[in-house]
Image (cartoon, rainbow, N blue to C red):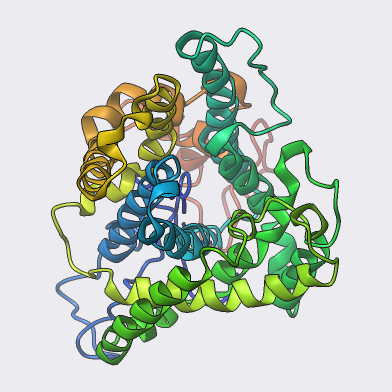
Length: 433
């Protein structure tokens, strides 16, 4: 669920793009595309054509990556009720779950680098992450009550329901971003926290903290990345190498279907809760981190860097993420996945095509316009006005040609001589000297 994911630590300069939205919610793009290092001639600029304002254009690579990732997320959810009858589908499910959320979280971390805890950033965090979490955390249990006829479905903000855990995690991760930006070695610290969480049973029921902590290294890695790192994995040699890597990974997953508990891929349980000794948890965290990052790099190597027909959909991946769950859950509640016709190769392909088309439609601009009041509410009534914004608003409302009194008083004042204070009379002789 990848809407996830804005300028997200020191190094490369980034500015907020007001039109951007994600993996997460309200992403802010870096000012340069990872596919380009700048102008065609380094160090040479044109005096007649000023360079475009940083952040004025979205980066096609990241929009493409977010869209493709959200499609993989939806496919994984649609395969969940079907995979029991097909070892191939189970292997594909395991392969996709190894990297699709890590990839989305890395992008979310990369676009969180500019989060500094300022009032403007906190406002965007509340309206773009906290409010959608509250709305959908309430909407999914209500949907279950109506469609599944389950009056006992509880509404609680402390126990994320289905896929709302990602919004809860993103809220916590972004709030802690200033801390990670001040640490000398943030990634080893985040990995140590994830390893410790994996050996702590009965921890993480509230706010799905097990997932928050076990997925934390991917977010922190995104904070540490630069555009040039994405350019490295998009080289031709990496794209070619990704083919055998994915093929071997799929073969390994086919072998591991009956030997590895897929619960490890969800990152929501400790080792003891999966029936393993405590020391297996940290080792599995290291192994999964290595496998996930390898497959994530291969995935990024295949993401197009140019504008495609689906590039525009990258701005609406949060919509596709949060809304497609109603389709999956509705079909599950109605028993549609139990139909024998769907438990065969043709049925599995049909379901995959249908859910890919559905999540694509949910990312389109018309759907975003309909649900923007929930996903991106303005909520001006809830926040104190910003002094700088008020000043700009007063300047816009001032009649043409009218200037503040201070500016009029300074019109005939020497640069080295301050204007007289209002209401103060200068001594005679000073005025006439």
